[in-house]
Length: 187
Image (cartoon, rainbow, N blue to C red; front, side):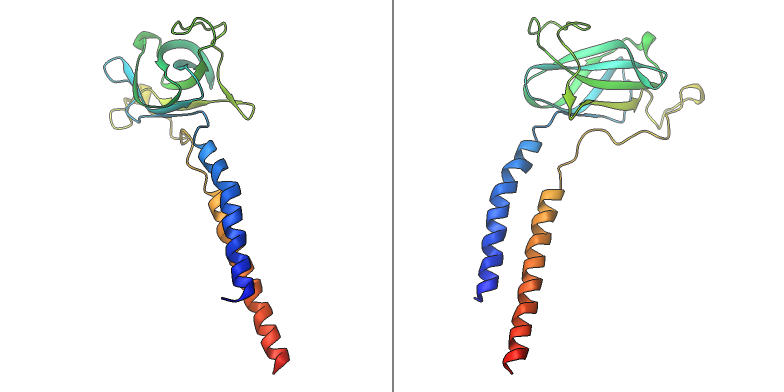
């Protein structure tokens, strides 16, 4: 194996060892993903919610595009929580709702907001997902689902893997070019 190929391989391994743990740690980043079913039988289903410690997923009514009154909440365990069903006050529901993650900092197991159970922050932003209260299929004209709904939750970051692949490709390309240049000067 040529020296530059060995260097490229070694560099890729070191880079993967350095970046790999960060990719794993990012899977613990707080996030929330809401099912597209809206409110069904007085409940909202949270497909997945990830919190660093005990917490809450809180459903807020909409107040001019921002989270408003709390209309429901459910407890979360530290880590990844799947298929969390949240009872909501359907009389207080608005066509658009906000699923927000809150900490459980006060009396653990008792929802205290406003108070110590504040919204969770990630990089200076509240962790929440905006969603339609009405399933898109069953939307009535006066409660039509908004068409500009954002994708909720967080996807696994691809950037570190792409960066590693790009670095290895660049090193192999440069190594091949250097090898060809050496070969042409020796001839």
